[in-house]
Length: 87
Image (cartoon, rainbow, N blue to C red; front, side, top):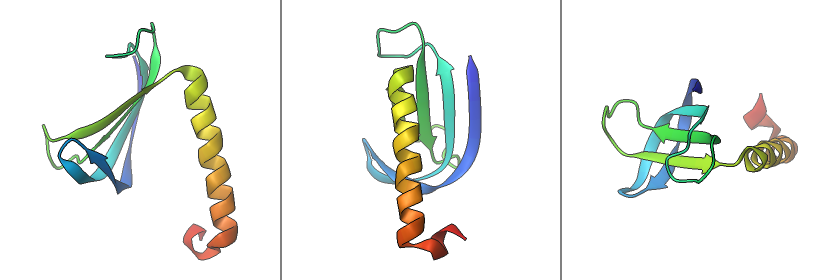
């Protein structure tokens, strides 16, 4: 298992509705649902709630690469529209 964890600031919508997220773990491991040997797994949580709700995503490696590309494109365009937010 390969896993990387970092603090984040945001919110996400899960089973209980909208929730704060302050930690994300990105791993390359065996997925829980997908029928692949390995997947890129993303888990968003509120770390203050030890066993609280989470938002989990499993992606094929190719889908994960496309997601990273689109995130970078959106951030580049956002920096043009709102440069102060990127200082």
